[in-house]
Length: 281
Image (cartoon, rainbow, N blue to C red; front, side, top):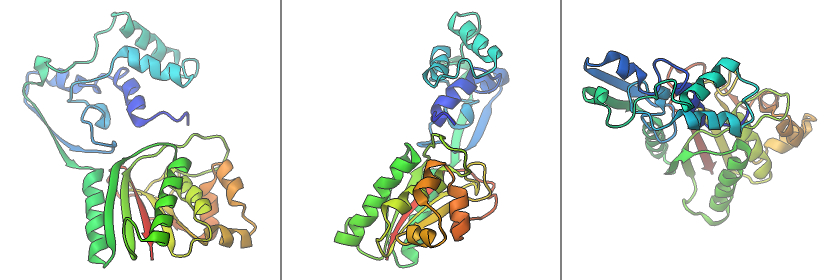
């Protein structure tokens, strides 16, 4: 709810856990350890995925405390957490294991699935379906409603000038945006991205922007994401739905539910971040 990135959240997690931040490897030492890793983190940094239980930690107690301080959470989290982080900063608690520690000499980490693999598969499928497809990036981060404007601009560029791809076009991107909650509505980062995109592309015929969570669950909802088109806002207006008001209230779920434009897949049991698509026909 505060807008912290997953990397920042994990910095805290690793310093209040007995297993995260390389501590599982510490407990298993001197046994050989092989980790098969499914990445749900942008860029697949091994020390961040699942908070890196078998990987040297690159963060410190000082940085973990700094995250809580940055977002004004020192008085919001349980006092025991703040006390532990401060004890670590003072050297009263052992730091998480770092690069070069002998406990990692017999540890092997292998990423078996991540966002890049999913995005590349999406491009291949789009090409198989006869679309001109391009993978833009698997490092998409930032405030969902602002990131949406960039993808809207790309859709307009294709529609107007045929670049970077000619129609029928499919741009693919991956990563994970964040939402700073200011309203009282219901939604997820992908649905919020789609709602913001709908406002940006209103009136642009043939432009579609889709955001979805690969685990099938976008935020605290039963939807994976939503579909925005150039006619979304106009269709909503016919139902007396004010797109800007819904966005201001972080209520993207109920907005797209009313239009029938939610993407509902059910849980996929595999989380490799989010995928964003820009289609232009």
